[in-house]
Length: 317
Image (tube, rainbow, N blue to C red; front, side):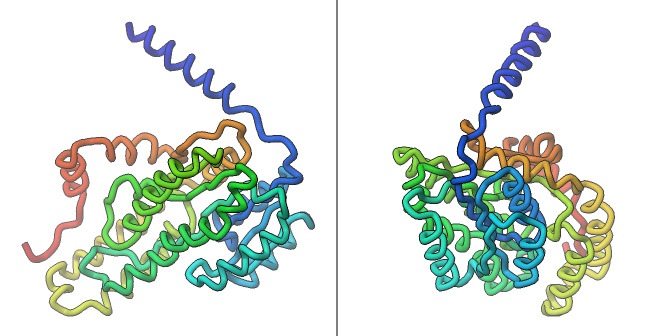
């Protein structure tokens, strides 16, 4: 019986592998707009798609990001400045793209730009901390998508949204999981709305990878900054040992579980952009596949028990 089930599973994966092999033709006339190309996944994706022959429009937040990308790519790649928090900036880039793509439309937009700080327990943060991240991670995704959606409909192209496994389960406090849950909701509603137009809407849900999001030095600086600006009564609730143990976890555990192979994520992004039959969801990273996603399907009492049993104890109980 078990061998029969294993055989069926193997047949399914072989079938899926063959089904997902075909790639779209005429890449040289297909424009792909990517946000957040200064570093990390966006930067690697821009280079990768450029090498594959796509016409990449890579948006960066800094001039240095644009300059470095231009030096490492072909003349077919176009760079532009973009601040996803600014409606004017989003509209200006959309106007440039409209002039560039013409009647063929925009093949794909990859909403990659995002931030992970400030991040910490909910009562360490202010409403302004929440707003600042939501403006980038959620409102920015929506604004960029809506600004070029008519062009994507014209091309019968696709929208690729980068969420996170923390858009499926909340195991940290603060605005990060909220923003990613929001991306998941926007992705699902847009997918259904755009289906009649032949537009595919796809979601990338990475686990832990070695980027600025998981950089222990950056995360440590963030935690220390939040701790120092908190009211004394909140610090007393948690205790100084909580701070010390939190910093130790960031340095020891986060770095250990973070995957250094960023191409696992970039490969999923490329497949979402270029495959004739892309998947609706991609979950790169073994931690995503084997732990975070299974945990998200468990009863709440079970997932809560698993996470709270590993939590750092507080001073005031």
